[in-house]
Length: 206
Length: 184
Image 1 (cartoon, each protein chain N blue to C red):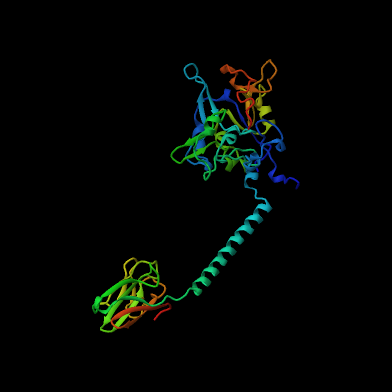
Image 2: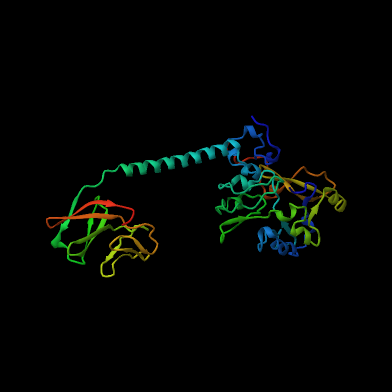
């Protein structure tokens, strides 16, 4: 069981794009040789700002919801694991469905692999590989008290809005604490012009 | 209803947020939480054990029925194979005995000495080839060798001797009169 008091905090504003996490990720024993972390440029033509994307480990994992092969499972400590090799059919549904763009299909081995928060390490209380090497601590793994003491200017949030879908995650993102009151969630798709509150699947029975 | 077991408590919520008892049945069959995915109910396990044992029992009974039926099979009657003039000394002849597609092979060893054996190798049922000059039946599939006179295994993988077809000669005609298994 993953120690409950330890949490993962991602602070994109601190990311310096050094690629250390990408290299460290390949060293992890659960997915040896492959880097599962995505280091993305936000808007490369105008900014050098990068953002590390790890699996957010949703409370309602969309990847697992859409998996037709029943391959994506969540362990009791709330970590969404890579697809089960005997079940995964490499259809790529999860790749398309994930709001954060985390899973990847490896066509050569016909398998989806994703960030599993270095399950071999975090399940025994160690930090994930990326958090151990991040020089600016954009990726931080520790207790809520630690992060509150270290980052007084920002507050952790784990609720995100994607159109009509609200997602709660195990991993926290540090949002700047401004003069305005903190929104209860981060509306990710608002900037894309998508209107919130309208459900394209309204009336569709599952 | 049994009380829920804490170790496999549901932690993953359905996207619509409704409680578990309002969810469609397939959510219970394909849970996202791996403790529930791996959980085997005692009832299911017992059902598996019972059905598997039942299948074994049925298989055993089927084997018993088969061997009983085989023992009850009426012995094949005499059947004419060929006339003496059709087979030379040292020659061989393939014929069907006791049933339509049971190939057997007749070998004339001397003027009035005949042996006949089933042609089916006792290893993997390849057709054996008589070699009277060497005194053997040769199975080309895995180099099995049988004695030409007794059908005994001389070499190779066959586990049992060839079944012998009893041969009688009456008035210049050769007849097969029965089959004996279990060696010479």
